[in-house]
Image 1 (spheres, rainbow, N blue to C red):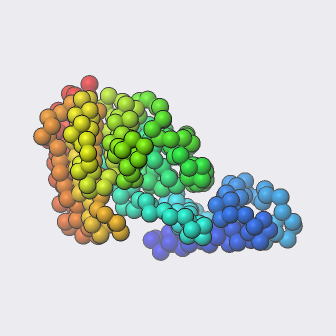
Image 2: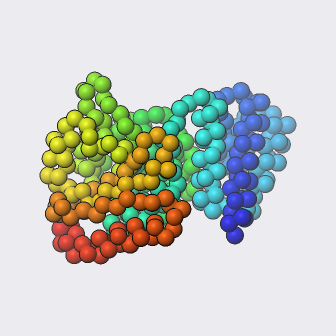
Image 3: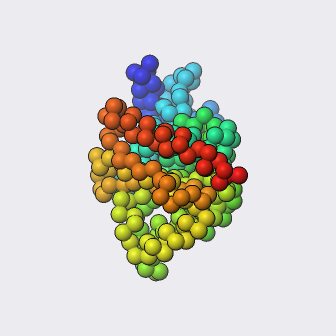
Length: 317
């Protein structure tokens, strides 16, 4: 079964890649423009770009390979992510913030522990190519109303392409995340860049998280992937004071060093409710490939949620 899925993933990747090559010969556009044209053709089920018959025939031969193949949403997501990574390389764009798939799956697990509802609203305010958001949604057994934001036009376009291919409706916002104004989010998740705002001499993650918490429902949760030195910056005490006025830090998860090329990261789990400040689960995750030790860490998290479900449900009323 796994081998067949790999074959499907490779088939989808190869068809998109070959289509891009043919379109380049006809239009000589940027790699991301070519991806957009290819996706439009695949979604339409025919060649919709204005090209000669020879090019159309070549493209149709490629797209015919996709007909009747039972691609999973993960086949398509992974194939498109690989295509995007090739695009970044082709266009010499630095993109060091791709979130590992295993983290998206783990965050989906955390959401199931935080919210028992079958319908939820979910936001990634720093969506990039949308890979984290799509991975989470693909692994949630919930009906999601999804929102995403990025300041870069191509990031929002790439997110929309994959959303359309996966059949996942996502309301996209092309703007500065600090100006995003939404309400009643069940869950806000993101992989935070480590940025100092030079114009303000302030630490962007502190400013962003304080802004995002205002978009949460009273019982909503924020799951943030952050640098391990997150609490070491100037004004961290002021940040915590403002955050804890109406939120609680309920979890801090140290991620395996082997997962990241640059500096280590943590996951901070925040909920918009008032709990004992000392009542927080703290876990250091082993390598995700160490199944035995990883399951021990999951049991610690499971135990915390089980022991605190009454406290959390009372606070969330």
